[in-house]
Amino acid sequence: MKDISGALFAEARPSDSVASLRLGAVVREYLRFYAEGTTHTARAKQLDADKFLAFLARFKRAKEIDELRVRDWDFSATQRFVDESLRVGEAPATVARRLATLKHMGRILAERLPGFVNPARDVKAPKQNVLRPQSIDAHEVREIRDIARSRKEDKHSFTRVRNEAILNLLLDTGLRADEIRLVRLSQLDEDLGWIRKVRTKGRRFRDVYISTEMRAPLKEYLRARAAELERFYPKLPGSTDGKIPLFISSYGAQAADPDTFEMSPKTIWRAIRSYSIHTKLHPHLLRHTYATELLEDSKDIRLVAQALGHSDVRITMRYTERGNEEVAQALEKVRRGKRNE
Image (cartoon, rainbow, N blue to C red; front, side, top):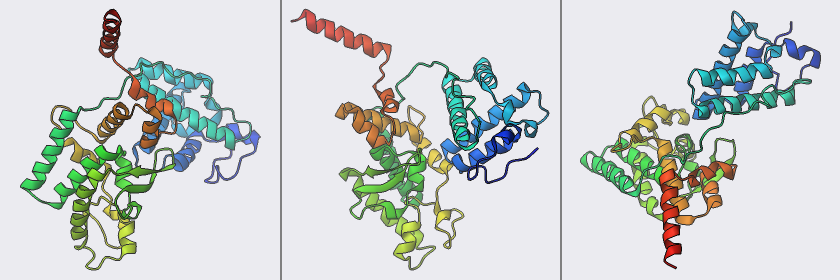
């Protein structure tokens, strides 16, 4: 039996050998192209693929994953994987995400491998209630901003200046944690009005607007950043500065490699969580808060979709969902209005 090589996605295999390819190697090659790295999306795809291969090995009574062949992945196996995941208590949203990973992988393989048909194409995702993403209200936003400011004033360290700037910029722009983590200084306009060419989850790029109110705090952070970098670069060339992340961590950093100044995802997550009061905060909750506030103020769903970098406005429509109590209150208000006419 022929095994797969690293050229799978560069050169299609003869259709008569497709069924005999090692499925584990095919999946690894797919992940190398479409889920490389440590972003949330990449890690989710890696986990979904691992879960499916482990299930399929049990389902096909294989002793190990490397015994699985492409022919072992069929519609029946995919449907059983969905059913089994729900049976053991996984949330419908999680199962739907796992299925989406399989559908995408199947579609890519169908494009690359002659005679291969996507086994996940016709499997239906579990139905789930669409809920409006959780956000925090304006009062709590003011409280956490006050906490960040008071901590910085109590001890004016670089870390506290940086963390306050990250908090405020997340609330001001709706950026994802990984987006803000990977932004380079060179992407900032000179007047600090825009962050240019921010890479989104779908490998697309968008420009992100920074409000006038946010520019003064950002300037304060940039001064602190410059002072921090002086420890590594007595004379920092502009070309090098532009390659260094906007938000830096000096832990383990090396002057010869600008990428070593990147903050880890956990560091950003912990920084935001430390400001929690009534609600356990995380970076994506701040993105939901930004989206909810923007929609309430603008009443323009397409504007919100563009600001968030959503490729499909249907994703943004989640923010229009309302709970039963909100529906009831709205109906009562309408009925009272009609009775008073």
